[in-house]
Image (cartoon, rainbow, N blue to C red; front, side, top):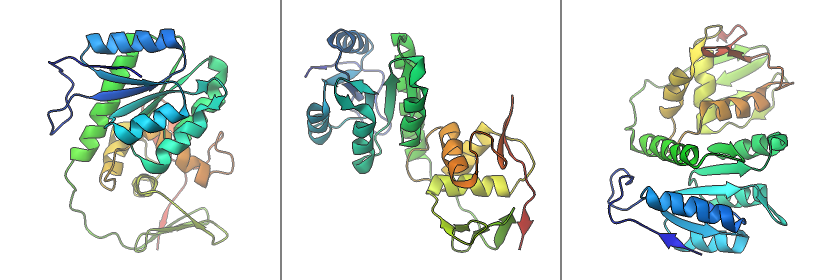
Length: 257
C-alpha cells in the first residue's frame, strides 16, 4: 500500500479543506506506479490495493473519494468487488476493462453502479480528466439544493403500463409492480410528461436531480437500467429510443387518467 500527497492540492472537495483521495484497485505493479506517480504530480492523494482484502481495508479505514477498479484482478472477479462496494457505499467508481472484447463486463459494471469506464490501454491524462469530471458531478449532485415541486398526482398509462404518481408505483401490463430507484422514477416521469418529444441529456439530468439526494450517475447508465425494466428487448427498444444528436425520446403515446 502506498499513499502520496502534495501540500497544495487544486482538487479539493466542495465544502471541505481535505485533498481528494483516490483508491486504485489494480494488481499490475507497473500500472499502479504509473497512476500513482501521475496523480501525485497533479496533486491527487493516492492509495493502492491489489486484491479484495486490501481494498476492503482501505475503504474501511480511509476516507476515499473515488475508486478506480480494474475488473481483471488475477483470480478475483472485479465485478464481485464492485458489488461489494455498492452494497455499502455510494463512493464514485471508475472501472477499467482490459480489452475491447470485455464489452459485456463493461455494461454489467455500469448496471451494477459504476460511474464511468476506461478501456486499456488508456491515456493517463484522460484518466485524470475522468476522475475530476466524476468528482465534480458527484459534488454538484450532493450540493444541489432540493427544489420545490407541486405534489405529483394522477396516473399515466402507456401500452398497458401504468405509473401512479400519488404512490410512485409502476405496474406492468399484467398488473405486477416494478420497482424503481429514485433516479429511474424521476427519469420515467420526465419521459411521460413529454412523450414523443426528443429530450436532451442535460434536460434529463436536471430532471433526475430533482429527486436524487445522492450523485446521479450518467444519464446513459440510467437509460440502460430503465430500458431493462420496461423493454422486452432492451437492445431494440420500443419505448425509450435514442435520438441521434439530441438525446432520447419516449416514442409511444401516454394517457393521463
